Image 1 (cartoon, rainbow, N blue to C red):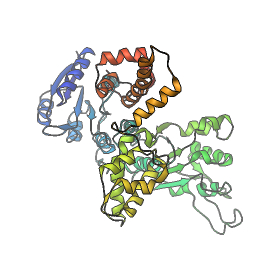
Image 2 (image 1 turned 90 degrees about the vertical axis):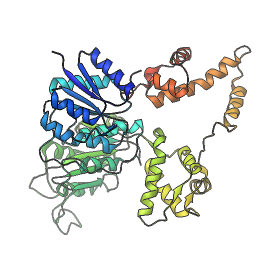
Image 3 (image 1 turned 120 degrees about the vertical axis):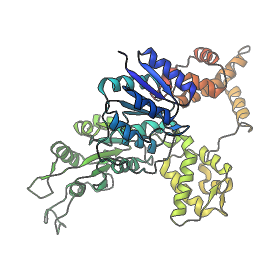
Image 4 (image 1 turned 90 degrees about the horizontal axis):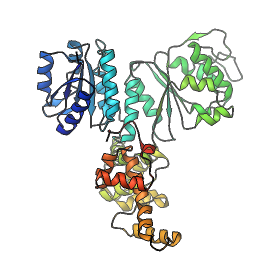
Length: 474
């Protein structure tokens, strides 16, 4: 007998595509587009899985999932949402969802999740578990969706997490989210920056020391491991830890026991480890500067944070969020005008989210009136501002003149050579934005999909180079 799937989706186009794909997989699919109809069907029948949108015409698709999990404990629930916030992902996980997919999603990935859900069944939420409060992780860009999904997957377990990303991308905020939204939230969250502690003191900082263990140890000190007992220990900049300390850290992770410097007694500790680094640890392992066995012990669940330059659509909501924070900390309450936002989005933000935050606080302080304009942004950011030309600027024409002067294409090939030179970065840009999804890329460009495919072939642009797991199948 075919497995029955209940599809709750109010976008008719999306629902039609999904219903056809599920039917092709051999499932018996029933569709509805409202919470009330969902509840009526669940009361009348049994389903092996339910796929539900969040924003429906008569309510929230996540509301009531905890009750549904109790009345239908063997039915897997997969949540889909265009809201694309960490709060939505966490709400879905707290309600017992088997999987969460931000829109747009990869249809093949969704079908894989349905197969797994039907085969294994879904585990309902634990009795008495309350939804966790959200943290201010701002950003709905496609680049952040994988981060949100990975966070939700580690909230109910103690797997070691390694957060990778450039300085200023928000690694500690992710670590705090894993703790505050996870099952250890009642325990302490202890952070230590391995790169900010002198090498001779780092073991004492991590493991503590006994009185008289070394010069200056006038009393016993409790280390970070003991302070974090029952909670989470965040090891920031782990790539800067000295080799000797790496060895002792590895031993502590393997045994779950530590020994204070100068001490003889081993002490059992119960901590969840979250580590982070801005360094590429692979060459450091080859050079003998980082232990390979420690790397594999830490790199159980890697979470890669994207730099801000790869998610420029998040600059505006981040800037407005930080402006609100500035006001809450006593700075004048301001607003941005559109010209200021455009300049902020044009800036390279080499210091990532941290640089943006500091810049917004300076803007709140320096603005001449309640509205921050482009002139204020230029004054605060200075010469590092790289404003992007708009479609009405002469920047494109100037770029074409420079290209013609430097390239000097042969007679008879001038038009097609110039067209190819400007089409290539354009097509690469939209493919990168859409994760290689040709349907969305064509829609973004405003051209026919067949035209796009023809030009990609003629320009020898490989779509696979831009493909990601977060795209909707075209």
